[in-house]
Image (cartoon, rainbow, N blue to C red; front, top):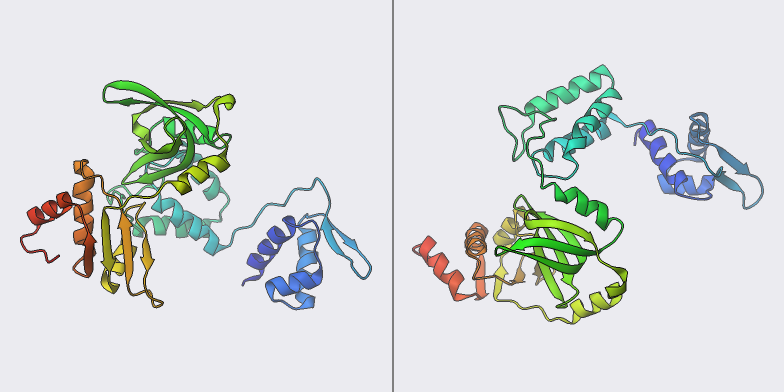
Length: 320
């Protein structure tokens, strides 16, 4: 670990603790006593107000009401941030409007040589969703649904929501306890526990017309909600066994809710259990595509007839 990187890490370590000793720094970062002492002195010169306590149980602590000094990024950390930033453009992420100011502030902190490196990376790296004719870091054309940021603002304060959406030409409202906000296939979804019908529901964010906190007096405790969910037996209508080649394919891509359980210690075989909404033609088609993507190294143990029919139509010879 380079010196500046080690010092930044030690500063974060110190800032998260009320008190520490030289011995703890030596053990945590595998450095000698002299190196630990020099690093502590350098951290003090950078502005972190440390107070030393003498005695058998003595050590250091940070003065109260003190603020951690500015963090210095290494070249490697800067590139990691920049590449992660590039990889998430055009992904319908919230707060996209802040990306331009964020990028400008980040670039303003860097030296000319570091900026030149990032310009070169921006020219040679392409990711899924990147327009090769316009690989611009500040391309904000793919904005998410405007209600997404409102959802995040509310759920950071409260998980009990009243969601209103357009469903089959009607406006309906559902009181829910939010379980997850997730993105799949370029769409955002809310997974929540319906407080009236006491079951899990999934809502497409694009269909929402309003979200607001749900009144306190009508709430069920989080503990009871989780107990009800645990007691509800999961229903599966698709069960497949995966061999090593299919597992490799699974790791490359799989639906968000799909998970496998390994059936041997070497993780070369696994089983997958999930539920397919056969009346949803889009989901049926996508699942068929995914099963074909997994390849021939699978054994189907249980499958809806609708899935089989879809597979027969797609492939003339499919050995099940």
